Image (cartoon, rainbow, N blue to C red; front, side, top):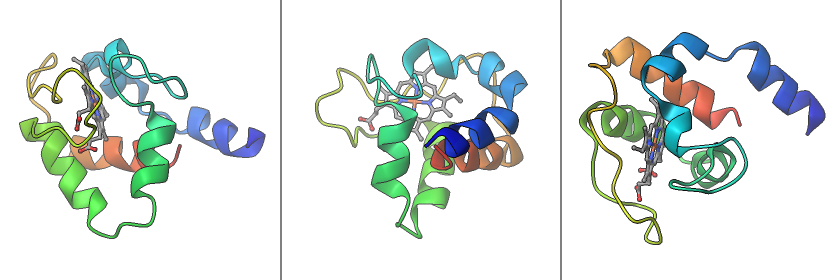
Length: 96
Ligand code: HEC
């Protein structure tokens, strides 16, 4: 796992992550207000539909897929997100 987390850190789209406040609710490995990025990655890693579905969800917000979380993912998080940026972010999440 050391190698994998190192790779994630090296290619982190940090400006986007800051601008969108991802780490306000998520962490890499500990579920808090939201599922951790490791949980999300292991849930969707083998799902070929997941990339597109998650890009849409990041841009539009949406329905709760994680029943034990108090809220759905909000759409407004510090600025509009372009399709390109959503793509980069979802690729990054799924690399965890
Ligand atoms: C205000 C809190 C908050 C912020 C900010 C936030 N998230 Fe989330 N996110 C959540 C919650 C809550 C869930 C679980 C929603 C659910 O049950 O589907 C979630 C779920 C997700 C999922 C899984 C979606 C699914 O349908 O399973 C991904 C991927 C994700 N977030 C990525 C991000 C990224 C990337 C950012 C920054 C661009 C971000 N989140 C910012 C609260 C947040």
